[in-house]
Image 1 (tube, rainbow, N blue to C red):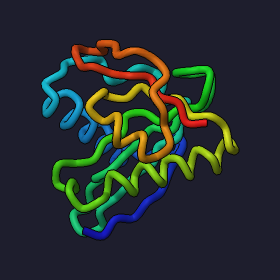
Image 2 (image 1 turned 90 degrees about the vertical axis):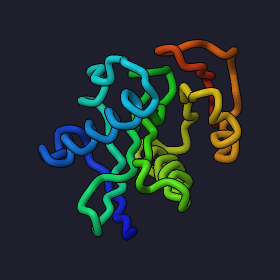
Image 3 (image 1 turned 135 degrees about the vertical axis):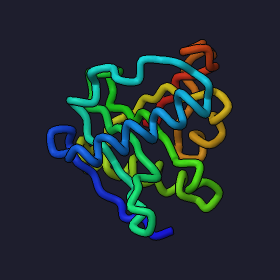
Amino acid sequence: MNITWYHRHFKELNTTELYQILQLRNEVFIVEQNCPFQDLDDKDFQCYHLIGFDTDSQRIVAYTRIVPAGISYEEASIGRVVTSPSARGGGVGKVLMQKSIELLEELFGGVPIRIGAQYYLKKYYESFGFQQVGEIYLEDGIEHITMLRQ
């Protein structure tokens, strides 16, 4: 797998990129996790989108939404963290998070980052410096926690 990483603001995405992003989010968040929810929440328009593009398959295989402060939380955020099932097990997810943090810092400076994380991924996010700052809550039937990286 040969992955090229790049980012675009929503208004810079072409239709193929947008389609593949939404297809990947749907495949994992709705179908794989068996969680019907309204993924399209109007936040995408205001965000940057980090894309991991597999040049072999010509598909987006990793993605995050970089959210400016004041949209999801008071702080900037990383959301919709997703890796294609075809890209799992080789460290792509770890690279995705590292690049997401780097991009957020490049765009907004060394600001705190707040995320809503699926609870079972707590240790994963802790490995990137995030700490739990609230109790477990249910979102779309899945246990989540709020985490903060200072």
